Image (cartoon, rainbow, N blue to C red; front, top):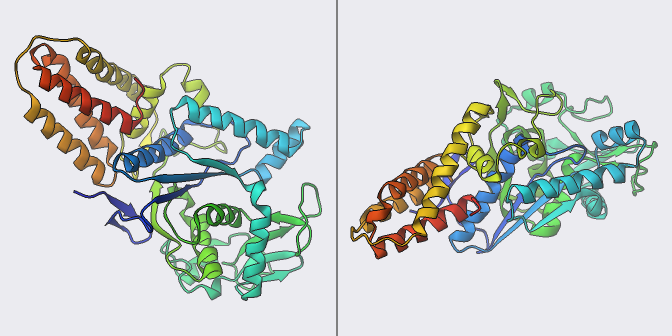
Length: 399
């Protein structure tokens, strides 16, 4: 069975076939104005597992994640703390790197900051102005959505629905669905451009990073489901009108939300749990197993009861690895059983990276090992150890 991935744009699972053999993947990272929370962990642990699984299948993976370091939230925090915006973004970018390391997220090839791609963003905006897909008004530059016939397709919205959304409302826009590529600002921090002083729009920052690193077409673009509109809708429009190539991305892969008592975990609601705090009570293995215990496209709820249950399951799994280190004099052959478990695990992973089912296979395997290890023949013990190692590597469980 080949890997099948659910593509948000087409609304169906598709056989995974990279554009050019090697896998190119871009995932929207955080805005670096505060500490990483467990909602970030849920999202980024999944993409780490996706990259690990692709590598286990023999693919070379280039995995780029952006860091948004040009944003009002950063500027506001800098003003509040009487610091420069660079101090704020650098501090929290480093905090984020430490959170990734603590969670054993190690497949990211590069973290790229938006501020390092201002020249690329400006060049892309100039290109869209030149081909009439953007227009300038009073120092602001807008993407003209009327020029992109597919605008709204990704988020399943009609032109009327798009107008009613009122993104960045302004009387100077030709169409209320149009979005900013460059916003005029005379108050520091601002950057100089051919359009005047200002700041790049959120959407063009990611397009500049992705195209600069991965080219005009690539395989996977990831992020939380809340980014479908307007962010990813805008990215598709910009990129395809800029390059003239479709599709910009072959597979759009989105994670569900992590909720607290049914409400989305977010900094604006103040209901978030920091990664550094939860790591004081639970190991990275427990947090990873918790984040992967629900299929990535489903919303999941954070609660301590589930974490405590997951901690016990982690003990069972790592206990199985420990008992396999002990040489036994058993003679019973379990190879056929091990092969059946391996098949279930890989079938689950191939079916849209269903880590929920894969972990169930892993846990039942661990329980079987713990119960029967003394009976294992040498061949069975070696086969079990080999499979367990592969499962744990794919899921990123440290041993």
